[in-house]
Image (cartoon, rainbow, N blue to C red; front, side, top):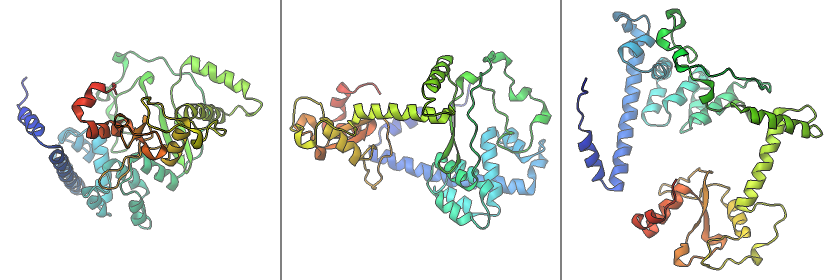
Amino acid sequence: MRLASFPSDDLVVDLRSLSDDDLLRRLAELLRRSRRSESELIAHIGEVDQRRLYAREAVPSMFEYCTDILHLSEHEAYLRITVARAARTCPLLLAMLADGRHHLSGVAKLVPHLTDANREDLLARAVHKSKREICELVAELAPRADVPALIRKQPEPRAASSLVSPAAAPASATLELGPDRVPTSAVPPSVRAAVVQPLAPARYMVQFTASAAFRAKLQRLQALMRHSVRDGDLASIIEAAVTEKLQRLEARRFARTSAPRKTLAKANTMASSSRYIPAAVRRIVHARDGGRCRYVDDDGRRCRARERLEFHHLEGHARGGDRSPENMRLMCRAHNVHLAEKEYGRDLMAKYRRPT
């Protein structure tokens, strides 16, 4: 079957002809329209749900109307119905979705905890927060007990043909609306992602699948650390191991140490053909920039990246810039490349760019 054609080629050509500024402006406008449309969609779903108009179709619930008639995914249906029902008593939710102060996933997390008393304060605290940050806020509102340390053997992954699909599940297993009731495809344990989930303020559940070799190393480490961690608590042992590894990496990368061999006064910070940055300079720059990318955009927003940090010369190294702390900034890889392209041009930097 041949799908209906869409003028995608013309769209691509049109987009490639835009300047960088025009492209960003059009993207921002499309996002504003999308948010307004999403808010209107949720409002309509809420009204159809309230009138029970789904009963006019061959479906028994609003959830199945969304999945079978509107062809939304199970997760899309769950999020929109959850927010639509909450918006009946709190229309502010729709306005905050429309103007971008909140996103759908975050609001769905907050809905079970909204009350008449905390509604305004809670929604205000969650403005422009990521889903992860909202999960931490929810953990503050409804803290859960610490989970016990546990090591257990995972079952062997089953063949793909043996996995039960949602369609093959009995009809009685599908109930109306609930994050744990939405049918999802079974995923072999070997491909499950690690989980870091907030339980309470400053308390997290960390869960991942490890190899037999990791378990053996952990047991050896438990035995060696019995003098300092007498009960063999896994969390304490892993935290100690991570802390030591972190100290070593930061010492090597950013020269962080409690007993530096050279001070800034003794370091050679003059311009040089070498790209080596003295340890004293790396130490000062890392502390001053807070171990975070220093890039700030035209609206005053600072990049939050802490991964793949590099040392950037304000006065370019190729132009004779020195290696003093005043001339150095921490930048993530993306912004270091961006600034280099602005200074030297994209074509030139493309010749020297390392694979990302």
